[in-house]
Amino acid sequence: MLTEVSGNFVKIAFADAVEVPLLRGHPKRPAARFNRPGQDALYLSPDEASARVAIGEYVQEGDPPRVLLSYEVDACTLLDLRLPEAADIYELARQSWRPPFARGEAPPSWEAADLIRNLGHVGLIDPSRQQPGLWHITLLRWNEPGAPKVRQIGKPVPISIAPKPVTD
Image (cartoon, rainbow, N blue to C red):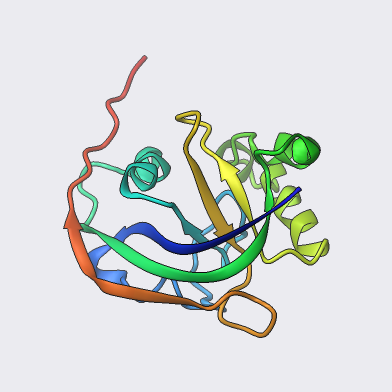
């Protein structure tokens, strides 16, 4: 159920908030698939194509400019939701998180993240639901004892992402 990862990963972020992804304990961290508002989670992808897929559904017309950030992640062992042994947790993780959140309910993916945290894992590998074969990592702990060291490398690279067209 575990896979070791290390190396360079990327994230697409707002140009005016390049320091926010690495902050821990940031009270204004927005809710997302694997974290409640203000809860630590660092979402990274192995390459730009995967990062574009990951952010695609969140891009809105009129958003501030975005940049591609690069990070070096030290070796760490993550719960791999791509593996059959993790199917029960993946079933919780794969469900859409935004509709329950909008209703004021805790999304099933938060339950999955809680299970992963309670098992003592520093994070997870999440297969892309948008494009099979792609994957992302989510670190639930980083830059603390017992967790991987993560550091930004290089400079932010301006990037353009068009919102997904609205379909009926």
